[in-house]
Amino acid sequence: MKSVMVTAPNTTEIVEVPEPTAGPRDVLVRIRACGICGSDHMYTMYGGIPPRQGATPLGHEPAGEIVFVGDEVQGAQVGDHVVINPMAASDGIIGSGGAQGAFSPFVVLFDAVAGTHFRVIPNEIPFEVAALNEPMAVARHAVNRSGAKAGEQAVVFGAGPIGLGVLLSLKAKGVEHVVVIDIIPTRLEKALAIGADAVINSAEEDVKARLIELHGEAPPVVGIRDARPATDLYLDAAGAPVVPTTVFGLVKQGARLVIPAVHKKPVEVDFGGLLTTEISIIMSMGYPTEIFEVTDDLIANWQKYQLIISDRFDIADVQRALEVAATPGAADKVMVTLD
Image (cartoon, rainbow, N blue to C red; front, side, top):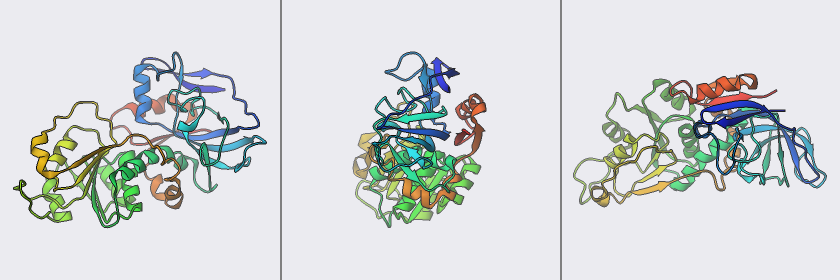
């Protein structure tokens, strides 16, 4: 079969590889859709993913259909539609340094356990929406790390796929009011369609003044002389240095900042100036427990999640899909479908 691999720095190729075989404890999945992640571009730039050497398979946001179930596997039948936990694969993380990638017709789940390696989903959920499960788990982990709860007010910087996933998870947690901030009007329109209570174009509006208007003014405290919005929680899904800098200049005392975004440049922090804010800065990476936690909400609200997808390509055009996904501003969430 054919598989998309990183073969050298800034080089991907479609390579012939042996079709995987499954045994009595395994499940074979025909991949029907796989999303492209920003990390796919990073892997390509660096020419692979440690610890693997040489050709490295790509594709870690899969959904598919079970075509073989080993005699010793429980909780699965041929024909079931499934989402997959790439991190649980015993032969390495699927599409992220493991032996298999999901830009391939088939993936085998060795020693497969329902609820650990895969989860069955209703057949009416489109495969392209189901393939959002992995990045949405990243967003859900950030929200879980934040401690978000009903009645709070939150701000999400960045209306890309993770930011929109954070928005959906915040609303699922019962957060009262969520503002999404970005500089691209079409992204802000999408955020409103998905469920944002308000949006701010930070290229055109005063973020601090607008947040005070939307969330009210925090009570004054010793050491903070200017007016601050009553926002409880900020989440950085943009990864731009201006985001934490902006947050540091407007947080009320006791607010939290959660950062699931990858920052490629250092950010200068004036801890002396932040002392009286008692801000909590929380980093968030991956999805230690969230891969199937987010699935219920995805199933219940799949029409909203579907809006996150901006571009669709057939696997025959996967090289073009990877190029579009890697071009800044060209697309938001690119999905590749396989027959």
